[in-house]
Amino acid sequence: MNIVEQLKKHEGYRRYPYYCTEGRLTIGFGRNLDDAGVDEFEAEQLLANDIENARAAVRRRISLQHCNEPQQAVLVNMAFNLGITGLLGFKKMIQAVESGDFQQAALEMLNSRWANQVPVRAQELAKQMLSGEWQS
Image (cartoon, rainbow, N blue to C red; front, top):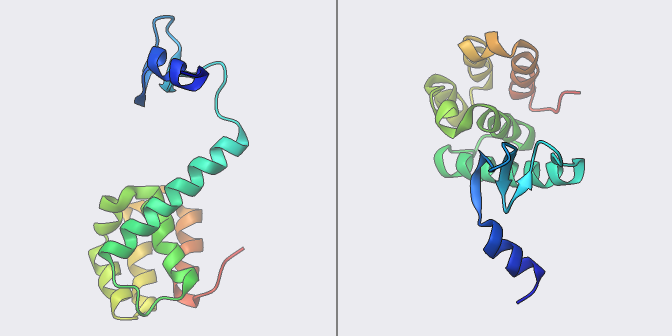
């Protein structure tokens, strides 16, 4: 036994946030989010994991043969933001991407409720999809 094993045994693992007996928002193996939060390094680790999960989900479900890296990143960004199920709801956009019609793909992105909800993000990603170049 060591401290890690002992704490895992005593705290137990919880994938989703919950309130501990003291009413503090907690996750994982007793991480008190109310008091400790998540530092920037931890947040970057979570982000890296989430990006890889979104990238894998996109690759499993969408043909990327016509996409360069910035165009693939648009799809990963949207999957990160909307979840893969939300991204897959963009059926016409996906058809356009899979056929290499990036002008139509960009138009379909902008003709959506999502574009109204996150207009700055949507405009930037539509430009990136159309141009195939990273936007700054």
